[in-house]
Image (cartoon, rainbow, N blue to C red; front, side, top):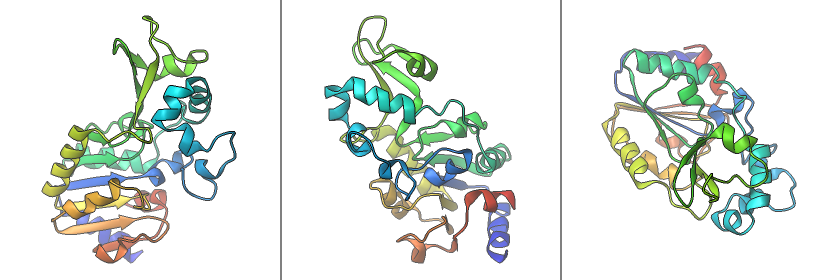
Length: 237
């Protein structure tokens, strides 16, 4: 495929790449996305998933929150796919400078990538809301009912819920990495969610590349657009 050959050439000739990925990076590991027809938000629950995954709901209905969270957000048994491993390979040979991700599953780190900026946090980190003691994901997913600290305080997953802001330090570092990049690969995201979709405007480098199964509103701004599954593209690199 001519477009993949072009992508291969761009990657080969660059040592300053930043990758920005959405749910499409992890769907090929078996993790469902949120907004597609078969996604989490189109499934039927007692409460809408958008409401369950809000800060207000977490505080007011922690039992129901944790019932949903433990059933739908437990990614511990999932494994990285070809995209995760290829990005790790690019990092190891000095080409990839950072992965910026909207995903909370920790699969980039599981594949070995070190420079990962998680815009929406991670299920792997959990903290007591009272004493701030750290708990890993296994403790939370294996606890009964509401996850509680040894001090009695409620444990909160370190994920960005609706009504909560993104971490300022993470966003600032992501912007700096994008500004410094020669190549910016945006993949597996519809680019419909703010503020993640606003990050593109900070890129001033040579090549903006968009890889997504569906068209996005930013396709006309890119040097290279590939409408294909990420797994297929990265397998051929």
